[in-house]
Image 1: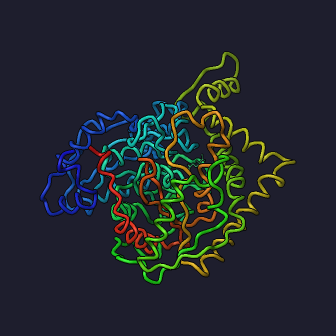
Image 2 (image 1 turned 90 degrees about the horizontal axis):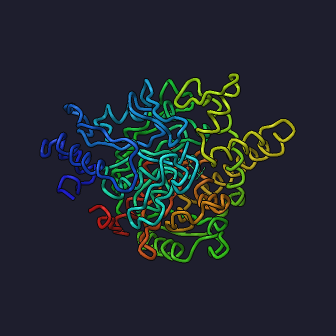
Image 3 (image 1 turned 120 degrees about the horizontal axis):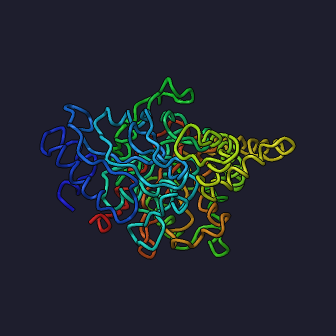
Length: 477
Ligand code: GLN
């Protein structure tokens, strides 16, 4: 790595503001690295550095953006062949916000098609490789964003999290991922998967970078009626300890040993427990807590998310965006030929599942029940936060698995999300930080807090991060 790309994003921003380094040189250094990407992390890379803009808070530190975000005039394909070649006429609010703050677009990153997946193998543009071991997946669905940051092909990146898609790939690639409170980031211009769950979030080398990027992403947007202003700006973290912090470990989410495909695998558990001990040494108290309905989160999620997706994806019909495959007869044949050719198998599976769950006669039994479970999960968290500041779990039950290992078994793939889906169902924020290595592969530690607790959550994660001292340098060379 060059000296420029060794800097964290926050360090680079400070040096740019102090005019100690040059924005065009920094952009070019990353552009060259992204251009030479061997991980298939990028689906598009800018061909030149933009004109530097003076006096912005981020000073010109480039950002990689998941392909799910619309970016004006730049391919925005959401990992799907049905959007091949689609160049939107506008830019998503979150991307516009960070660009205005001085983070120009470096490139668009690969992802699972319409963000449906946990391994990036559902991309219409090929899988992404994990920089820690290229025979393994980077996680998903923001796998391209995670791999790009972990490998030092981008200083930082933006992804989206519906059921874990920022936190889980961050965990599998040894970086930091934040899923903010639902509504903190505008969803305008984000290609919709499950609208009641989707949130944008930063993927970064460390917690400080995560806080800095998030602070420029958030904000109420009149074009997204579900967006809200955070009660206070996202602060950069400073905490050195966890004095007085009460951590709750939900017994329902950490049961099992991974042997039968459920539960936490031993290396992940070891790293999780070591992190809990470290937290205690930093002054935290650690106790078991209960989230009685959390084991049903996965079932509820895999009804609610496909139900919403089946409605959201109805707009891809060959008329308005991207691909069109003409039928020889009528309009309806054109729709069905286009959708047949354009959508991949996982997307088709979810449209079928969601349409079924919403059909008259089954609506109450499936979708209605899932919504009730969702309410119970929110109540569980509310009760837990009466006694605890944060709930902590491993982010993913496993470390990065071999490419192809779970592609034939969708249910095994869905189990990846066991510890990450309860939080978006409850709309609450969560962060994943690297807690160490297991057999040479990164393990993620997750902290979740009440709605709008971003700054406190980030502070706690920062104190832990300093104590853990995880080093991801070896994969950034
Ligand atoms: N892996 C989950 C899914 O396939 C979560 C994806 C996401 O957060 N976008 O739906």
